[in-house]
Image (cartoon, rainbow, N blue to C red; front, side, top):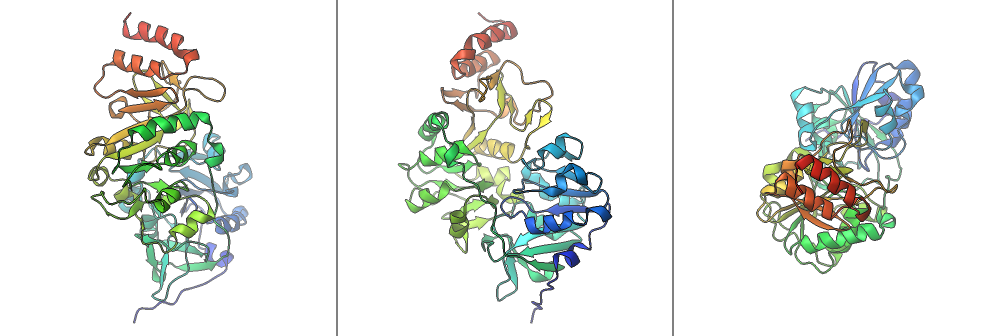
Length: 429
C-alpha cells in the first residue's frame, strides 16, 4: 500500500529549510501562496540574497519591498504589478523567456531550484493534491526542486489534468484557510474596448479555437461572441468571460483536434464564481505550459484565433507588449507562442488588439518604438492589428503598405503626423 502520510508543520517550521543564497520558486496566478509569503518575510533579518523566481503573482508581495532588499531578490519570469517597482529599481530583474520554455529552465538545470513553495487543494483519499488554478510552470517546479513546501487550502479548487501531485512529493505541508485572489475586468470595459471587441467578433469564425488573455479587451470580446457557434478554447489562461459562453452552449470544444470536448489551459484567474465553476469539473483540463503553449500543439487545432495585446506598435508592425521604453512592465509570456501557433493553424488568425491611444492621448501606433523598448513580437509574426478604428491586415504587405494600413486605424488626431513620418521613412508620396 502506498504511504499517504502527509507531514504537516507550522509555517515557521516549514520555511526554516530556506537558507541564504537559495533560489526559491513561488507559485503564481490565483494560486499565489500569500500566507507563506507573509511568513517568509518574517525571516528577513536572518536571510540574505534569497532569489525568488515566479511568473505573475497576485496580492501583496512584501518580499519585494525596499526594506527587504538585502534579504530577497526578485528574479521575475513575468513582471506583475506587485513586483514591478522592485524589478525596475534594482531589487530585482527580469528573465526574457517564452512561457513555453520556462519548464525547461528548471528541468535542464539552467535555473535550478532549491525550494518550491506551492498552493494546493487538500489530499484526496488516494493521497493526491491538486495544483488547482495554476499548473503552468508549477508542475515542473515541483518535480525539479530539491525541497517542496505546500500550502494546503480547502478553498483551492481541485482541477483535472497535469496538476495532480501525490503528498509524497511534498516535503512538508502547511494548512491554511484563505480566499484566493480575485480579479474582474468587466467594470473596466469602455466604449473603446467594445468597439475593438466588435471588430474581433466579426473575425471569429464558428468552430474556431480561441486563445485570449486577461483584461478588458478579452472580456469584451468574449461578451461579443454570444451568437457564435461551436467555439473551442485552447489557451495559456482564461478568466471570468468564458463561463457565460459555456453555459449558453457557445463553447463546446467539439471541433478541436487536441482534447475535443474540453477546455485546455495552463492557469486560471478570476472571481470566486469561476473558481467554483472549475472545481472538480472534467470540462477543464489544466496543463503544463510546455505543452499547452507548444506551437506544434496549438497549430494542430482548427481556426486558432489568438487575441493578444500591445503597449505600442510601430509602422512596420513591430509589437512592444512588455516594456514602456526601458521600464519593464510585464513579460514576453505566451504571446509569441500563440501568435505563431495561430498563424500555422489551418484557418488561424493571430490578432494584436490595442486602443489607438493611451489615456493621455499618446498614439500607440508610432513611427518608431520608444528608445529602450523591447520588441515582443516581430513584424514577420504579425498578421492582424485591431484598434477601435478598424482592422489592419499586414501579412504579405511591404513596409509602405503596412504603414498605410496602420495609419488608417490610428487615432484621427495622429494620422497626419504618422503620414508625414511614413513618407520620410519609406520615401513615398
